[in-house]
Image 1 (cartoon, one colour):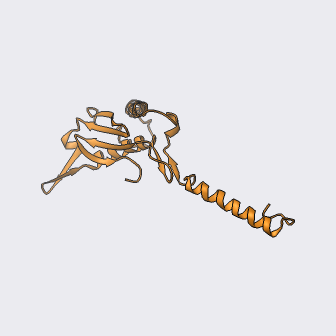
Image 2 (cartoon, helix red, strand yellow; image 1 turned 45 degrees about the horizontal axis):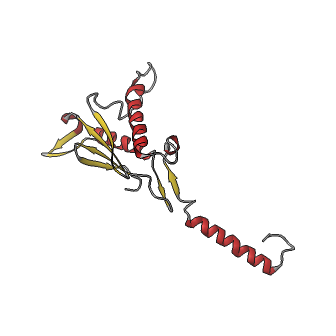
Image 3 (cartoon, rainbow, N blue to C red; image 1 turned 180 degrees about the vertical axis):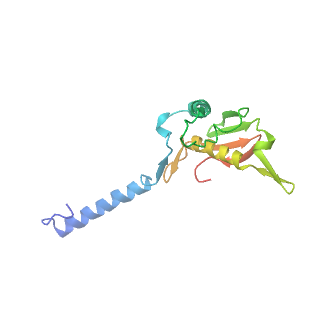
Length: 170
């Protein structure tokens, strides 16, 4: 209507104002700035945190068992932090709060999970990669952005130490 040659100046101005209001309202609702994780739709829009925690557990189990296949001769081996972690490591996925998911990595061998340089002990690159991978799985079920609240706040921990805040933007 705004571009039509027979539209009068008053009608054109009114149509432009209405269009500007619609576009401004759309931006206030955050339609342009929303972000959903890659696995967000897998559990459904209104999934409970316990259902999300179950899905995260399944993803970790899948990464440990199914991805643990041998590489055929002549093919490049793909590094996967979960698959390549020591087999004795355990994972606990909990929802201790109404809006929180916590993944705890336990039974980490000292020589694999920490490195010591000049008497200062730090987290090893392998343990950091494992925590990052777990945070990525967890964030796949989250959402966030302008005009929309996060579905949950998440973290990855090792024996009570928080290594990675798993929520987007933190």
